[in-house]
Length: 343
Ligand SMILES: Cc1ncc(COP(=O)(O)O)c(C=O)c1O
Image (cartoon, rainbow, N blue to C red; front, side):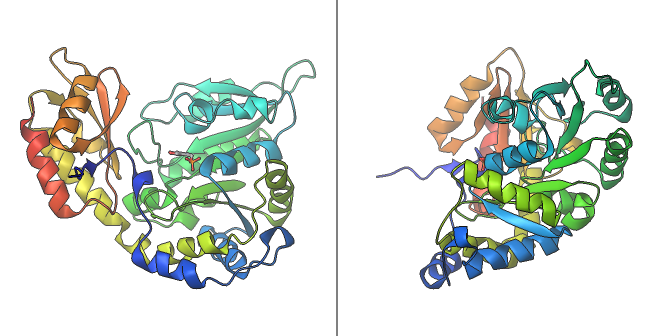
């Protein structure tokens, strides 16, 4: 018999809902490269409105959305400022250099974020024999930092420093709605100071495929050309875009439950003498568990797997736990008991 795991590795494991699957059958479609897919057009319009921007483009993945943004905002030889553990720098296959010819300038942040002083220091003076610092990329919520949230105020302040120095600002908002919920604000408010924002419908929102890149009309027109260069021009993509539209109605209003499950799990894990957690750091649907007593995190990842729970290995002494809609409160309670007692 197949083992049913409680899968806490990532919110990307979420499956499309019954409503999504049914809607895929009857989605109104056309050739999106010709701009003729009504469902894609609708998703792009709704997404731009949700984020308070003029325009949007549907792309295959978060990586594609981020990399199109880097390409559109920069020229070969330019520098891009990023946090050292950001997704764009660490997990997008060096594409900012391979495709856009840009140089990453990374800043070591605290909990995923650096401050204005660090940012100012990283911006190169405008001298002809130096690379131009062109772009600031931030990530909110911050995945590798354990789903940490950058406040609207801090975000605006960092973008102001960047803009005052002639930089463009891009947000990797793969989980922007999680950040908005945690701060009791809107994604639109978070997106305000950025020239472009990427968000994913394929993570906690549970659609099977896709991300949106939003920005000005001019920026998105350029992005459309770059998407095509990457082979990302899709045809009857309405069959997948429909899932994003449903996700906004069906999943978004319940996303806060994922944060509640993460808090429950973290609290119970914190009672285990083998683990170390900072409960205040649990802000969204992702958190980290550090292991104590010289044991390796890999040991616990494997032990948990034997008992039917999947978590990710983050580093030699840290595991990452991610909650999502396919983990019920009942599943969370089962996992809580194990997190509390496992040794
Ligand atoms: C913060 C962040 N940005 C971007 C991405 C890339 O998304 P995708 O896997 O759809 O390329 C991810 C994926 O996990 C992510 O966590």
